[in-house]
Length: 190
Image (cartoon, rainbow, N blue to C red):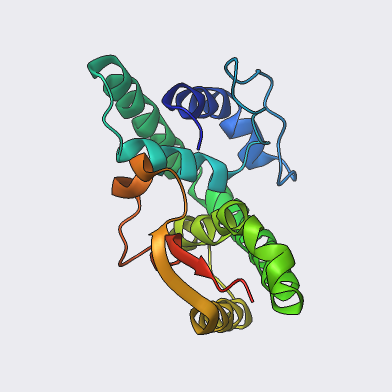
């Protein structure tokens, strides 16, 4: 999982371009800064990426300076969401659809060849987590997409083996088990 510095810098960089991103037709917006040394490159800016970074940080033990920076960034993000509510909702809906299709593709790959794909689960389940975070902000999730997500959850539950938290244990407070059940285990390997 990314470091605290990584998520804070992603939020900082994303918020610099957020209004331009919201008003653009782009779903994946390039971030013009590099990641901290030793961390992987930043993904492109998306609302799901911002929400995931913020959620990861909210459950961590941050020092006073980091907590103040997270509060500042969170307030700014919420203000931008309020100011550009229609654009935010439209972008969240588009991203929800894109992430849902990628999540479906992974589960189809898993269903065809479980042993060859189960090791991808900790990475791929980010998409399911982003769907959870994006849902409340989306304009309206079409019933077909809501049904697809429900069906994918049923498929996952049918092969799911409860177990350890899928990501670093320091993230566990950010993702309660009742809401993010799919992070507490993984699909069967066979």
